[in-house]
Length: 97
Image (cartoon, rainbow, N blue to C red):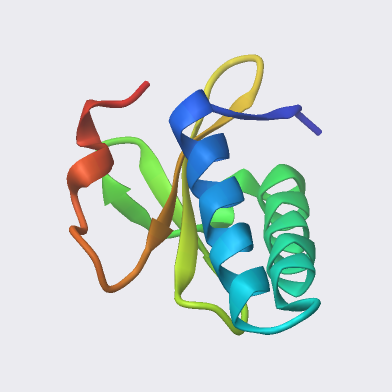
């Protein structure tokens, strides 16, 4: 398995979303983080499983939450470009990585 690396903007999106969910209900932010981790593990185990969104960028949905990991596979790693909310500005991430 290749290592998974989040770009800094994707890492910030992850933190912001988790903080928002935690403010909505206790432990909901941690539940979000746990499911993002599970999605990340799925990407690492089978990076070609996600449907292609644009070019070489693929998408992995986060179960139970309206989020997806947008990632691309390189020779040495899997690079997460965005932790994207599915109902907001769908192509804002295109200038990353």
